[in-house]
Amino acid sequence: MKYLYDEITAQIWPAFRKLRGQFSAHRGYSENEKRNALLNELKAAGLAVSKEVPVVHTENGKRIGYGRMDLVLECRVVVEVKDKPALTQADIDQLDLYLINSGLPVGVLLNFGAAEANLQNPDDLKKVFIRRYKRENDPTLKA
Image 1 (cartoon, rainbow, N blue to C red):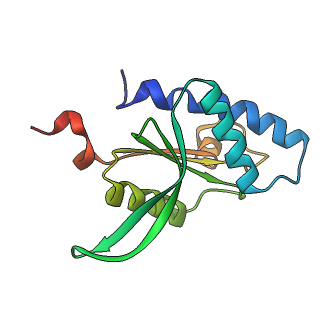
Image 2: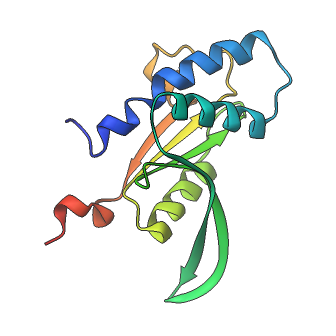
């Protein structure tokens, strides 16, 4: 195992690539529809998938609001789905906040946009896929 929950995250990439190819041939689907298609693919792969999972945001120990994580796989991995030309720092910050406030250690950002991105090019890959890890939430490191 190279990464924590690699057995889960390894199933995301094939589902994403399959759908990305299908959506590039048939434009017009919304981000929500793409997320739902990904949910269906991941469930078909045998994963337990929850959709729009609420998470409470806190600051200094006090509740300040809430968000909704697009997908949570096996109650362990957060998946946020986007459909834009490239992932931004704000997208990464959103995922990091979900990890911090949910207590989950692993998150993945997937971007169905960036149709011109060459998935073999590491710089282009960053436009469509980012994996995040919060060491402080890793249950294998807790005593």
